[in-house]
Image 1 (spheres, rainbow, N blue to C red):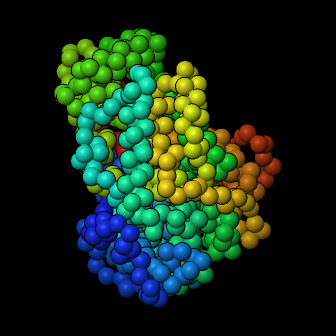
Image 2 (tube, rainbow, N blue to C red):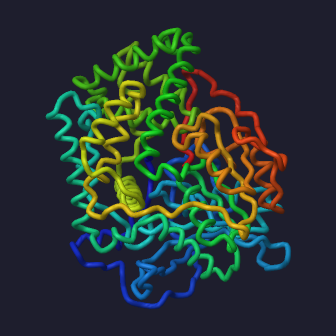
Image 3 (cartoon, rainbow, N blue to C red):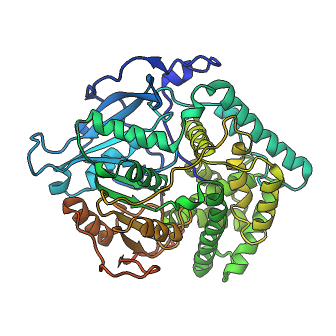
Length: 528
């Protein structure tokens, strides 16, 4: 489950004609021609929290044609790339390419390039060419998926994600079916090839086009799964591999979402308890139980009285899901919660929704790609009764995300392309040591996934931090970043050679808890 921002290319708008594959043409892959970039894509997740890239002026862009189908490489689509180069001289001190991906699926990798290059120490940044790419279907890659009119699709207030009766559930099922049908009608030629495996093969095409025998890769969240896939398919072509906020490959993808329901609920309870600890500021109750009662009473009220006519219960869920990714925004979320409950003031709640919920054309592009990839990667239940039974069972113990997450993924129950068989993630003697970075209470990618991947990659090392912020590296934790820099520089990893299955190889302290000031201005990010 995710919310993500991507840019929509003009070519995708032209590709709305049903059944005509404008983005796929029969021609050879072209050489990379680097030149000035247009507008640098914004993350939508990091803006306003993280500093602007210090090296933005050195950004250059290119397009790369890759096979639509690697079994039939004559037909191609186009990937949009950008990079910030290190030293102009390619000498022995140069460490090659560091390819980056922020997650998703559906996120623009081009949005991360400048940030990574700026955050690496100068003596290391100069030794890498940091390269980002919009994966197939995303942003400035062509074609860019878009299935519905976002203005109509996201118009608030949406139906309540928690259906109160059969009629409400049927309406939500219809909405999911309509989205799946719209994607199939527009992109029937592309959807069979929208898979994580093909994205990993695209990464190797990028490596080849750059003239590199090996590449380094840093992936966050879903990007960690891409990295693990690449390491499985092309182990001898990996120089360094950093997986941050690690996806458990055993659950791809239906089971992963069920596990997320539990971990997001736990993280939401962390937020409610944090709010209770600062009852002198927010006045919502002095215990987690009291604040939870206020929360669900507010949610029920919003069914009939949307805040500002905009924020109903589903918009509330979407807004506060952002708090599951980062506690940086907890003060703002708690302030909006308090203002609405204690003062009947809807303005902070509407402002939080506007800030943290993406619902424009870029967001719809990201959602379309998310579904296209996850629905195609693996089999999903096609009998809605199984979804209903699983969600009803989970909702009793994890009510915060369960139904919201179900409807976000529900088009996969009706997707026009069947799910495939995921590549089995596995180690290789050719693969160098791998660095894993993980927060213990991460909601989107639970800690158990990092432990599992550490078992799969025998030479890996796990750096653990307390708390639940999603996306740790280069996010302000100096301890983590010291380990990261040492690894990228020369491959050195922390921790002993002898390890226990449940213990991290290195533990870093967390960043201090957010200041609970009602006057505090915050702007958070999802850390994807």
